[in-house]
Image (cartoon, rainbow, N blue to C red; front, side, top):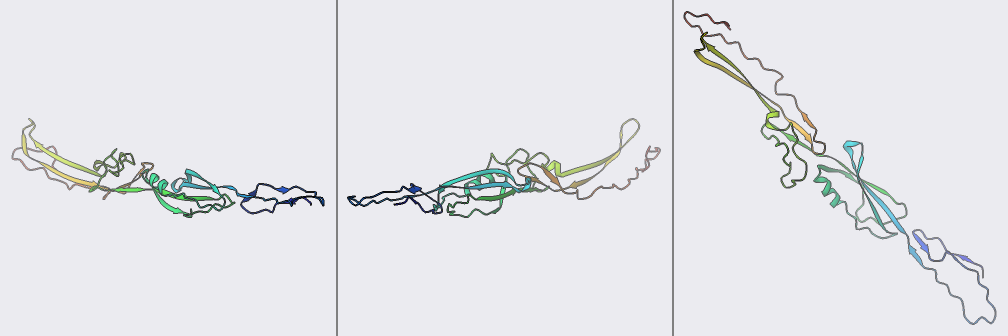
Length: 220
């Protein structure tokens, strides 16, 4: 009998690639039986996690291993939960749940972006404190998000006094407050501000009070 090549089966490798040739004689007492066993091939797949805010920088790359035709028990949920605590949120994911190993060694992509948190004069940040109290090791409010960074109060005070320093009249006090909002990237900590509620403020002119027998150094 001529040698016989074992047939190729996708995803499987025979334990014998070629059954050897065999010579038999009329007085051969037994038939020849050869069993070729096919074992599923070891296969791989890749799942990469990328940061869309940084030109798809790879944050993590998981390698899945299994046998051809075998169903993977891999899930992206634990990785997403871990990255969520670092300030990321899911954008897209093309990894199929219940993936079955094939021969193509595919790469699937999970795309994430940076979370952005808004702060306002009524709800400012607390620098160096966690954004999420339940995640104390996670992103913190960066410098530049406190109320003092969002609210600026300017005061003009006019004092009226004699040349000996004695008070002539009550001070004229006026204030104005500038406000703005901000947002920050939970991953990088970069703070972005809106414009102030007004670019500038003008206090009205104030006439100095008339005091009999005295002349102010500033009339208005």
